[in-house]
Image 1 (cartoon, rainbow, N blue to C red):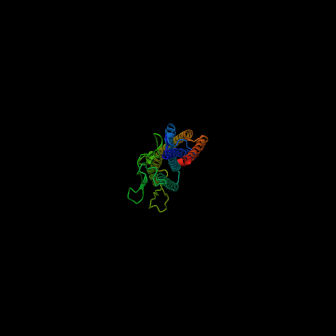
Image 2: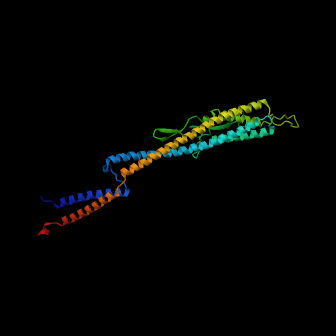
Image 3: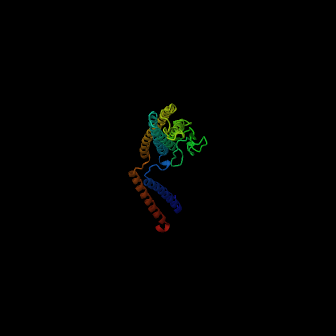
Length: 321
């Protein structure tokens, strides 16, 4: 059978194209260090690699969420520790005020300190994060959760009010696992803010001069430390404060428990990610020894093909006459 020059050219071109494609594929494998690039390289391995890479991407997102949630929980815990310290300081003031021998001047000073610490707690409860969101107002995070309003029309604030809600935000931190990312003022002190209002009222009472203008000598300035009503109000304030402190401590403990959960999940995910990385390497990493042999063989085959074509293309009847 006769083989025309065109047939020889077509056959050689097809062979050269095939070898060139195979060589390009090996070059890509060697450049990326990946054995399985196309599904045809290893269908089973490619399916498993896709699954593992998808899982790794999910873990990366979970770890990012965990980091963000942990940061905001730590911030909230730090702020609430400060609030709790203020409550303890106020309790010390109340114990001192309950001493019937305390001077009226001292009661006034204690009232001023209690008022200042109460406003400080309000500032902590109205804390905004870096994005301008209020941490402790539930899902209503664009307005301050605690306000201090003038309810009697005298131009001075006299009542604390809660403007947030009791709902909690959540974040996904593992497959099928969500965690609450915030606590609310109502979780700690209830929606009516009894503790803040009780302390605010008592602070005002302690600072009430109670002076008879008709007494030119001002022999008895300030409230009477032994006044039964004052003693009763102080006792009530201590009881209210203790209940609030217990509730606040429980909320702070819940933040710590969530941090422990996040740490456990992060450690488990890190372990899974490390195992996945090993499997991905075993399934997809290129063995450069055999790849180099294949690369060299394909180069030699291409060179041989080109030389053969060159010789065939020079053949004609005139060469043999």
